[in-house]
Length: 313
Image (tube, rainbow, N blue to C red):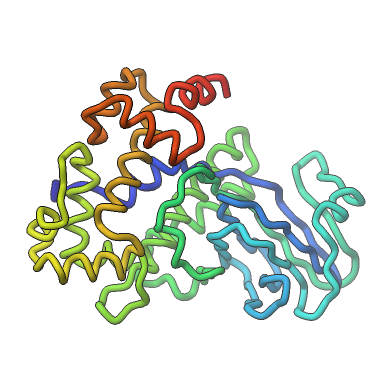
């Protein structure tokens, strides 16, 4: 139980899948609105030049420099521009006028100044609402010069740049996996280490008491856990544990347990050949009808129908 990797377990269940939209070569004066996409993390890696990225109101616009990575966890609409204050054009309109070339590059704008970007994504299972991403800021920027204490993240950014330049067979697959790695590293880097940090799921994982309870839930979802049981695992009083868990995770302990059991069942239905009754038992349901009712209430589709649909797709 002590070695349960909760963060990897969460991303596995969320069906994290990275990929590349396109490379962008933007010149002169430009401003492009990238539309919102639910259950999707956007990533923009600046290969050369500089540009600004921010929300549509530009209230949180930040300048990117060569080697920086912008991560937008919630798939919100945002603007890429050579400077704030430009009148942005919708991405769809830009691509209608400048389709991707044979190298998969969007070339837009003319004039002095240039921004060359790698624009990618990490998609998640849209039906799953896990608290991991709920409390993250709208944008996180990784700057190469600030990563001296995280050489692993800096190495991933450098490999991303090198693989983009190489442009060999298999590049799309490698870049997709690298974007997944960088997303997880970004979240791990933003894991606070003190009790005064902003509440959120990563704060809970940094709390040794709450982390012990989360490891217990993730490693043994089939156990009939009570708040008292989990408080004992956490080494806290029942009342203090329940209050801190709710404050940091954003859900009561049993609510998180119930939601996690159904998320885990969804993963097993999609990726395993286990019988539905066996999946129900592994996820803490002694009764198959009870599991079926709970699953349909949570996801709007019964477990059997979901499994058939997942296999067909």
